[in-house]
Length: 78
Image (cartoon, rainbow, N blue to C red):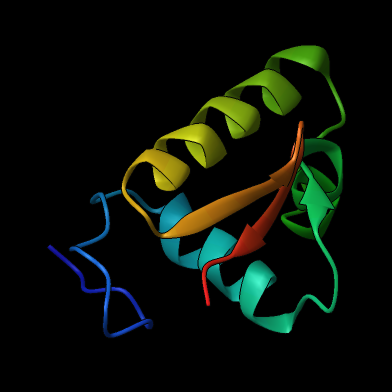
């Protein structure tokens, strides 16, 4: 399994998208919504893609890799 770029965190889930999501948050200067992450990943802005991304972001929050700054807004954990 690949490890996260943030040393204090657990191992990242093994998916092709997770490292790309983490790269988006490493470059972000503010909290992002699932739709913005989809745009950054060049995914079509379809409800199924946005909801899938939101679910993945929620899983990363549960693992302590991301933080939900506000309802629906995510940021990298400090």
